[in-house]
Amino acid sequence: MRTPTRRSLLGAGLGLAGTGLLAACSSGRTSSDHGSGSTTGAADWTDPAGREVAATEKARAGGGRVREVRLTATETRLDLGRTTVPTWAYGDRLPGRQVRVTAGDTLALTLANHLPEPTSLHWHGLALRNDMDGVPELTQQDVRPGADFTYRFKVPHPGTYWFHPHSGTQQDRGLYAPLVVEDPREPLAYDHEWVVVVDDWVDGVDGSTPDGVLAELSRGMAPGMDHGSGSGDGDGDEGGHSGHGVSAQGARKEEPPGPSRMMTGARSELLGGDAGDVKYPYHLVNGRPAEDPEVFRARPGDRIRVRLVNAGGDTAYRVALGGHRMTVTHTDGFPVEHAETEALLLGMGERYDVLVTAGDGVFPLTALAEGKDATARALLRTGGGAAPKAGARPKELEGKVVTADRLTADESAALPARAPDRTVRFQLTGGMARYDWAFNGRPYKSTERYPVRAGERVRLVFSNATDMWHPLHLHGHTFALSSAKGAPRKDTAVILPHRTLTADFDADNPGLWMLHCHNVYHAEAGMMTVLGYRV
Image (cartoon, rainbow, N blue to C red):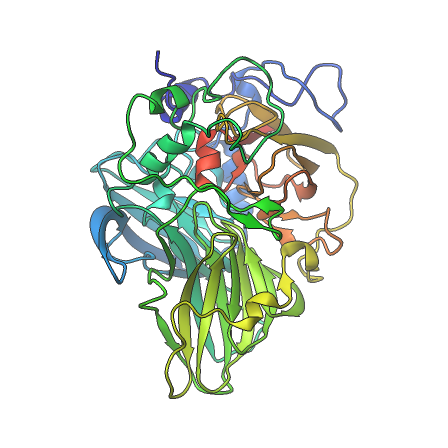
């Protein structure tokens, strides 16, 4: 019998919201540490559209304008330089058209769904009202084909963000776009701004689709080829795919379209060993391949703010600007003490803002697909001369590399010192043999939630029991990366294999919030869960 899909299980879960297992709370334990589960009634969970959420939204800083935007998700063909591919995108461009607002504004964006499947919009990194977070059957219903939905919410914090679906593997198509929230009291001085989105691309190439990639991965690797591990819960679910993604059993019934995309032998010391699961035929900067790059023009001496976003599905990027050093000013939208570097490492979902002072000439902004022996690039042109060859790698890629744990939160963004009221522990489990990625050996179910209460300081402790790295993303909140000396504020953080990562946040945004790996395929296999506010 075919295992139910994630979407069908989520649909059933909406009608039972709040009746699921409390996967992290048992009777008789104190609120500071939580273990196995018990059940509770629907009235115990905050309603994503309830009065607590409405009250929090009303109290957010506002007073700005209402910014109305209309967005269409549609089937289209995109020019990737050497080829044109059928895909899904926002309009006819990649990335989708940038949305720009000012902190305090209200964004009213209407999404029209012209796709053959339901879709949604998640606002990655924003502390917004829960019923606008865009997780189907948890915070909203799917936007059905032919329908539209208006996301309306106050935008409280300046920074670099982006948006994408939270529906199956759709994010690994062309459905993403940057969201820039300007600071009305901007402290940085610069002449130009360059928004740079890096991405790995497979959709429409030789018949491949992200769903086909997931189906292939879900078969698992042959014995001896596993590049992930970690203990599961030993429940006898051979495929490890109960109610999420594409079941391993179901994937064996149908050959995925296109050539094999499973990757072996991708190695990176920066990522602790194995670099990724998927061999992508293209790596892009702002929708362009290295052979046909975007060109950003400035004058020598100009000061440029570069907003970097990794919209990839399975690839970390090491980014450098040839001939330049970069000054890191923000990570995930929040300011850090300025730090000079030659290169940056971005996991999927992470963002960094940097300042550079432009030299005279033509310089490659290069994104090395970490461990995958491929590059994407754009060009900064401030004068004459020929561009370097497409495959050229600037020496800065081999220089100093900044990762989030080496940064220090700016005083304005530092989380005030406070002992945690609640500690929630997660073991990251799974591997390639069964493709059974999960938290605590339990694949995602919308009705299984780890409880928190409004007003608490919550500590999340992640222990990675797998041989893979994972970029972990928390919806609706920004946490202090407290396992790092400088405790930078983040919403997405990379945890290396067999390491522990600790993150603290204030529970000040009631609702039901996803916590998941931002590797699209790990998440769809089951490495997702929910933090639910209790009332």
